[in-house]
Image (cartoon, rainbow, N blue to C red; front, side, top):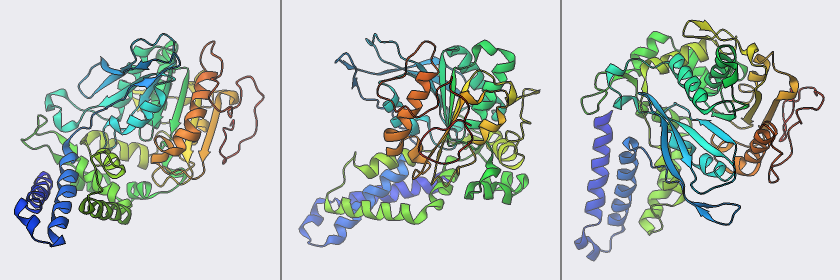
Length: 433
């Protein structure tokens, strides 16, 4: 797979160099311009598949009227992931602490870059930064979904109880499990609120191509066809992984025609001289094509225990030999967010978390379905910016100790002291469940 990627990157670089050769400019043939454009797009596409994108967080103007830069520091370091803090020096106003739990599903945590930028003016933001498995030596040991859950437990303990957790996509069920684990082991360390965005709490609640695939293969077939060993080129040589390039091919195949058109259009723009380093296409695909390998045990345990055995949905999940009981969550406010047009985690899968929290009062439960949002839009697109983000900030504000609701956020969630209302499944406002 790496040979194929390197070869295509070399072919693109060669075409770019040949198409840009000065002597060819004397020949009025558009073929050379198209060769250069094809090479430019192809080289960039295959080269960025193995490069971790920069966070590149811009400065912003706070309420004090001053521009504040953002610095990034590691507050917890471990073999398979770090806890990063986006510090805003000079900001005197105290902001609620937010832990963003990034997915480990083939992309780097930088996939949530726009989410981080949108939250920084109103929150003190931390994020889980998972490492690329191909760069982790075999001596570091295994890393499966139980280890992932314990990492989250450690991060939550470090940040303390005045924390609001937002889990995006894949980590939603494990974040819920980490909260339930803390509810029994160290209740005082539980976060104040938990927002689950587009996560597969109950994959059986609504079928998608992802869930269909999970049930169409046996674990033996999956291990034989999907798992590979890291080559000598990387520090993790010998480690068994689910390659990021393989995951990327799966992502692209789900919307193959759309991606093919996007690249054809970009080649045409490059040929006309209209493309740039930071145009809309490159801004999106610089992140989308940057993929990381997952440890084999994490990938296989996710498919088997979350998608096939439905251990989270059945409240049968075990961590470090201890059964996790979601009914033990009694004080953490829980909110679910789903996209009405999400083709990866369809509506119904995430809201199942509220039924699992049997010990939680109805006044501390809320849900939201964004009618026309896809999977990416519910945490980084216009649906997030215009509708979901204000509601999440309002939810955080209502569940912060001694905090009044933020003035700029939409008041769409039920107040904690209001009477319970019956379940409603759809709509663009929060509803108690």
